Image 1 (cartoon, helix red, strand yellow):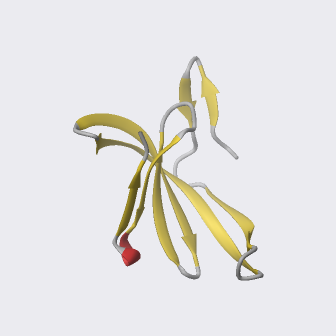
Image 2: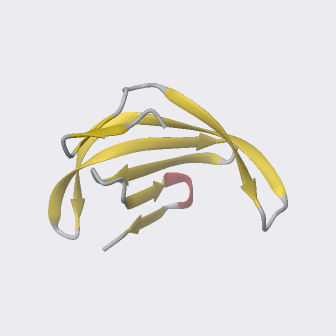
Length: 89
């Protein structure tokens, strides 16, 4: 929520956590999550290296790493506890 675009570039305050309530409709439960911008990283995507914005999502059930491009499009998700990685085209 604190991130914004300036001249086509994303600007986010580093190490500022935001907390949200989330719903899992399938399990009919709710939980508290936190999201934190951890900076830009060079990440290999389909054989090419891209500089993406990294966010860390934490909850009581684990931690996810999310990478977004400068248009806030989700490009990659990594869930180390489940050995799961999702990369979008």
